Image: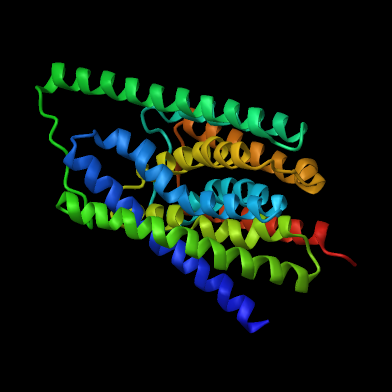
Length: 324
């Protein structure tokens, strides 16, 4: 079994590195083209950090492991709220009252409800995928329009100063940014392949389903880019970045990843995910909406409680799905 564990860990490392390179290259090109920082964060960075989930779910779907594909997305959304918000709060205060957070959180709850409804119509097929992609288009359009309004208000108030801030680690030339994107796109499917191979074999040896491995091991691994981004933001005293990162990634996970994958291959939703995990995911979405609506500033105690809740969820997943 050593080879399977090496395959899983090595695949996850490749996904994290490739996803980071893809994000850096995408942001570099966006900056060269003058795309605003808010649009970059809500779209390019959110999609880039969700790219590992996309390649994992698409690869799993094509391999007939629909439970791994769905479990990866549902588990990642749960980890994003409980762990990706919880851990940075242990380092520094994480404000949840960022402008636009409430509106986008409402949309996140809405798409979570739509996704749960589609799960009950399993398999999630071509037309369901089109619905999710259409909602993704609505989200992107709203993000662009909100950004334009923000920039117009800022120009009217403070003058027309739209120069983008420098971003650490972003390539400074178009050709280097393009090389980053190419390397990221090559590394992601390679990492996804080894992760799926290792995860499915480990699931068989543990006596649990591929859905359980997707909900926990793979979901946590593919959430590491979001976790790393949020932790570094907390270390740099920019904790407000965390909630935007989580909201954007969760929306992309449901709309882009499930949407793209289901358009290509139907996804069968395991009964165990429908009966328990999707409701935990919805509860996490509602919790995030409440935090944003009440403009809560997460501290060390709240962060510890969120991390503890994620540990409890993981324990319950294995307890409910491991044969006695």
